[in-house]
Amino acid sequence: MASRSNCCIPCSGERRAREGGGPRLVDDAPAIAARFSAHAQVSGVAVVAFPDRRAGTGLYAFVEAEPALTERAARDYLAGALGRTKPPEHLQLVAALPRNAAGEVRTEILQLIAMNQVDLIDPLLRSDAERSLVDGIVRNRQNLRDRFAF
Picture 1 (spheres, rainbow, N blue to C red):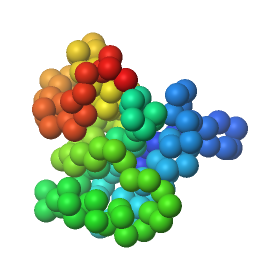
Picture 2: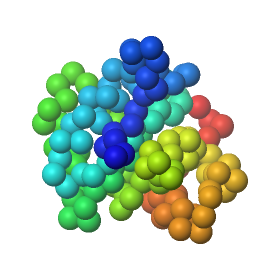
Picture 3: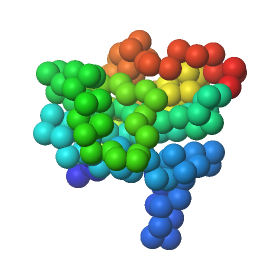
């Protein structure tokens, strides 16, 4: 069965950030993912880091949710329990997250979307169905900054 959240790579029993993710990915991303995973209208969440010239490292949360959940309601729900954890810079509600045959979220695709490097995604797509799913996520992406202007 697939995990509902995906935000770090486990290494030797401890959490370590993906390269370049820093403390935001190690500390804040798991709290954000855990909070969303507890929501009844959320079936999956992936939190990825992206370089941000203002914040240094920004977080982008992709939330697989029922259509009735709005972004405002999702942000309010998140704010209600994060405490000192900084919310993600970008939050995108999606009908489905791209997954591999084992049901694991394809974070490499989501990472490229978060960094606005959408021209690098096509070679990673394995089927027309996956292409259609990812095209919808790309069309509605939140980070539209030039990927080279960090």
